[in-house]
Image 1 (tube, rainbow, N blue to C red):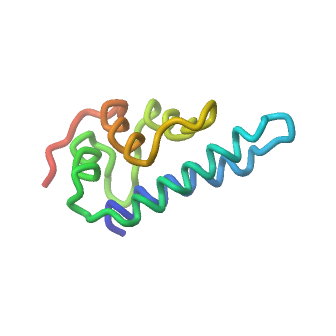
Image 2 (cartoon, rainbow, N blue to C red):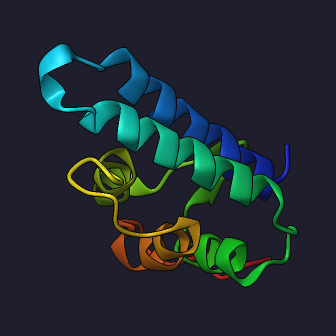
Length: 109
């Protein structure tokens, strides 16, 4: 799996977790979050492997072997995307994420 696929799969997994949390009293927040994350995953799937967003995440240390790992802060950021409001598009998530990653930066190979 290439980095773009790893990222898209990770985000889809986060979206599925939000769908599992949909509750009557959440005002649609979990469903809104899940839909926004599925939108981000669909956008990511269209990106080239050398897209600047993918490269920035690689430099931030998010890709290790066959996994995407944004660290604890990055995971929280992704998991709460659109949870409290409808702000931001896929590019906003992708451009913000490298600054939030809690790994030592890596030099791309």
